[in-house]
Image 1: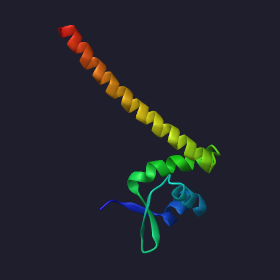
Image 2 (image 1 turned 60 degrees about the vertical axis):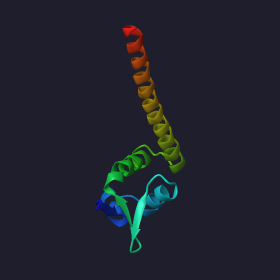
Image 3 (image 1 turned 180 degrees about the vertical axis):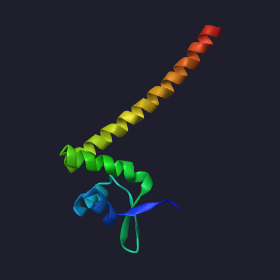
Image 4 (image 1 turned 120 degrees about the horizontal axis):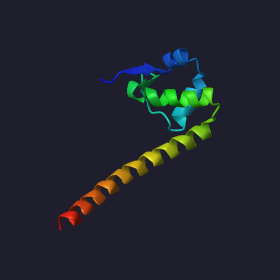
Length: 100
């Protein structure tokens, strides 16, 4: 079973508004599990939560800004992966050309 932390614990630990947490969930930036009407964040999603919290409270980025940044970073990561795949293909073609 995966480890999780409740929304209420996160609010206390990180000293944030509960509405901010709920807005992250409502916007799809965080995925949660609900058990007995208690909302939980899985530990593997904690780095994303911390990043959004830091951007919001330290850099004063609003929710729409967080959504844009998150989408841009996802697109950049996708492009990096595609670039790696293309480089592998190019290397394989180059190796065949050098052999022949």
